[in-house]
Length: 243
Image (cartoon, rainbow, N blue to C red):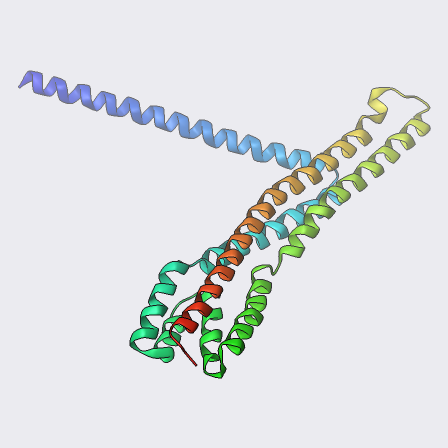
């Protein structure tokens, strides 16, 4: 019994020590986050809010568009092979209307394009193919919507930073002229503004550029799948002699 009680106290001690260690680690993480946020705030103020705010707005708006596009593109991604198999089975068993019902119940641009082609299939294969191509261009435009704004923010953020750089250097030379001295203490303020605004603009552009390239690759992958699947659909209509 004594050994059992001893073991219980030992286990309890180990648990308490582990809890204390976890609390200490959590406190260190919280302190690090607090210090990081404070550092960002200080750098933002040192860089002059008048020049840093437009750069921050570019980052916020750019990330908002990027997040919306990521969600939209992930929802637009479908299993094209599975969809084609279901449509082929529906064409053989229930005809065009059954295939259209499958497209209507499936989300994504590929299903919408298929629906347009099937809806015009009774007018002939050529008309169905033209309908698929035309609606494919419409869906491509929807996939690329908002990308021009991300590209704009990537271009304009460094320019805003460079604008702050130029203003900061002008301020530094004004301070030199007023003081009649070129000591580091005189020009430090203007140079700090110049360097911080440039750094902020470049960081925003780098972050948005990474997401932009990811989105472009995602869109290219979806468009490639749309084109391949559309060709397969037309071949399927010809094979099943739908008209």
